[in-house]
Image 1 (cartoon, rainbow, N blue to C red):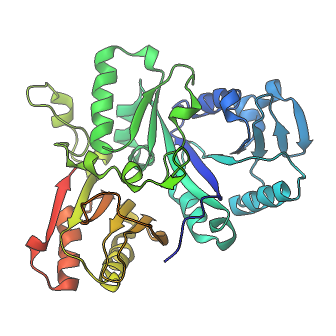
Image 2: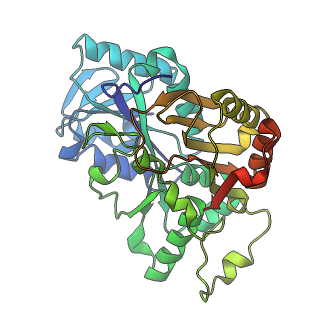
Image 3: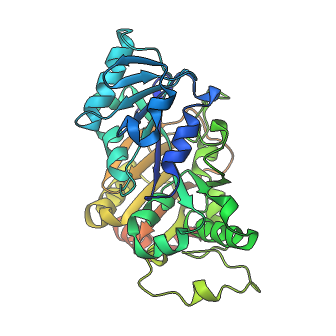
Length: 364
């Protein structure tokens, strides 16, 4: 097993559908003093009006902001840009930075960026995923998610969700949208922002490594308890609430296909069996597995193993130094599209030849 390199640079991915306020959010973030020593990788400087805030041009594709934030445009492949930034930082050719933020395009599925961070050997040793931040338009979000799967996936895989344009809708609309998002992604922190105004501290430090305690905080990162609530895909429903729109939606609605649940394994299993199970799932249904997070109790280790995957790609497993509490069950969070908990459980049962009651799961 591998250890998390806590000295590696945390990477946050900002995503959001076209017009959802992603650019406005990023524009405000790069002006915030709390973004000093942050490198921001964007598609084009002009898209966020950076020319008006330009303080110093380091070279053709890197500028330094008054906040201390370093902004870099993507040149060629993303992996080349990230390698170049790290190398130039090491050679002191550009100002030092201790955090990286990547902006996706409005139509982008964030999965390829996460794959890049998990797969490239150079990047894996120097960067670590902190979290995914998704912007959601308070005015158009429900309609956008109904029509575009990309918007659903962006919200479903996020660790932090920022509802933009919150001042343009009434309180009931905001509350309904938040319920809907919590059903789609029970563990994400949801924030509201007007004109992108939000404290960066609310958006970052979502990863396995907790910079406050300087330790690996798996419970904060996994948040398995969030999936134990009585929530339904596409929106949590309080009994007595009138959600006629949500109950009567089109059966082809994209977010109705998204499920979020946590599977608990009561028995200690060999790593080979669990690895075979996850490999089987990703081989045959990888496109439908938006994200996996898990803490595993395997026979070969006295301490838990942490796994994290996106579609077909898994980050190398990480061994923790100790269990966070007295509950030593394996727990794996799945966010999937059209892949029910029963299929996930049955695949494991078939591999282990154990009775189904060896596995329990809580729906989120």
